[in-house]
Length: 184
Image (cartoon, rainbow, N blue to C red; front, side, top):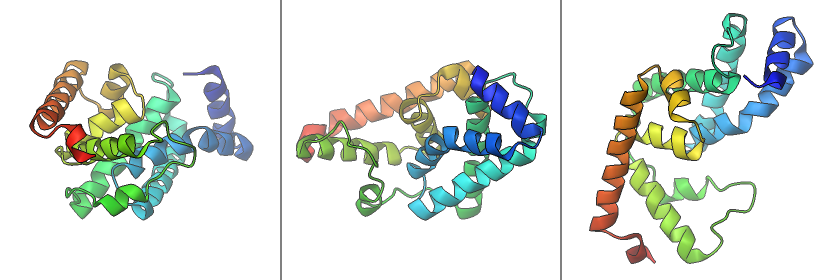
C-alpha cells in the first residue's frame, strides 16, 4: 500500500473526515471509470457511491495486506456483481450510451477514424460475457495487474490469466472476422 494511502487510512479510521475525503478524491475517478464502462451513467454514479459507502463501513477491517486501491476495486467488483445479479443487465449497451461516456480530458484518439475503431472495439468488448468483460475493463482500462485482479476478484492468478487470454482470443477472432478498418 502506498505510504500516503496508509497514512490516510489510519487517520480516517481515527475519525479524520478530511483524510476520508482525500481517500475518496484519490480513488473516486478510477472506480467511477470502472463502472462507467460496465453500466449506464446514472447507475455508474450510484454504484460508485455504493462502493465508497461499503468502503467506509469496512475501513476498520482493512488490514493492508493488499494496496488500498486493490481493496477498493475488490469491493467495487462485489458491488457490480450484486447489481448485475439484481438487474440482469447482460445486454450490450447502445452506441448512444458509449457516446455519453466521453472523457473529461482530451482523448488520444482525436481523429474520426481512430474514434470509430475505438468505439468498435468497445462494442466488441461489451459483447463478451460479463466475467470476461469485467476482466478486460479492470486490466486494460483500470490498469490492475494480474495479481491485483486475483486479489480483487478473489480467484487464482492462473484463473485470471486463463480467462483474460480467452477474452483476448475472442476479440482477436472477432477482429479477424470483421476487421476494425471496415468500420471507417
